[in-house]
Image (tube, rainbow, N blue to C red; front, side, top):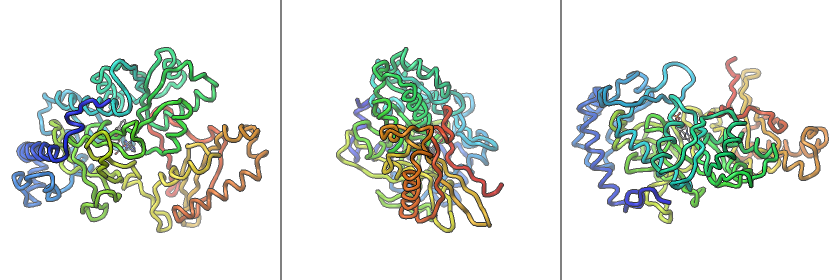
Length: 445
Ligand code: DLL
């Protein structure tokens, strides 16, 4: 189903006119109301009226997370605090969080883009959504909640974690869809399989997964364990939260539609900031066109991806590829650039492995070393008649062979020698409800 066909299927030339009109209005507003932007535009020698259309955007400087931090908590807000009806924060581990604010219109806009995203994922009015994103300062829980209500769904606001109860309510309330981080969806899916539950007792058809990078291997595992369709949802608090873009469940693998009537995307070179042609990877930069409380001009998301127009899809809006990684999460190991998602990419080639993995960095003798941990896929070995709890002993030859094949794959694909360690099923940390950190860095211990 298409939630808002007039907008989602608007011809590109009309969309450009709408975007440019909205952009001009927004630039006038931030120049008048946010001292940070007045200074930044003046320094760049650009006045809002110099930007006639979205094509002129690259005359303007970027806004970065450091700017939000320097203006903590409300310095970049363009509306008075009394018009802000909600605050959220972006997920960060240390120090002061990044604070984002919403007017009533912003909450309506947030709900609209999430409703579009849920519909693209297969959801329809009348269906029940189990919302396993965390409720609280994180935008996932409340963001999906309001969007699902707007679409006309019944929401089960269970939040993340408590897997036992998740499974009970999925069955008892006959949820049609679940939204969660992909790593937590995997935890739930594996638990359902491990318990030998019958899928006939469930009514699940769709999953809406995002908030962290995930792989085709993980998609396959969740889809086949639960017999559902899983779609990608992308977003970040600074721009709105979840619902900046979403995959259509019938167009899997071709990217996620960016709702570009509200969020104008660019891809730029990570080092030079210059535009990168469509189809090539670079940093995603987004300008909000309609947001009131916290409008952002050319916001440097730090996420690396590609943009492409794919004219055979159901909608006209541009699509972004999967997130390859965050520019600041790129590891440079012995001179080679490396994102952990490169590991996830080849897991489907090894049916002996589950999609879960972990990267451990150490620094023996002052040289960076990488160990990648994988979990055995118990179904694969059980089908061969090998018991999982005794796996390594019984399947020694298989395992040695597997390890050397994985090492070769890593050398060929990434250009680095890495140590490979295999764990029993459930041997690696799992998501307990939220985002899963796959990198353990002991280099500075
Ligand atoms: O994670 C918003 C969200 C909630 C998105 C629920 C989807 C579902 P933040 O906590 O501010 O917001 O983190 C934003 O998470 O810059 C990306 O690096 C990463 N991220 C979000 N969605 C995806 C995705 C929410 N689908 C940061 N794939 C972003 C890969 C994602 N990474």
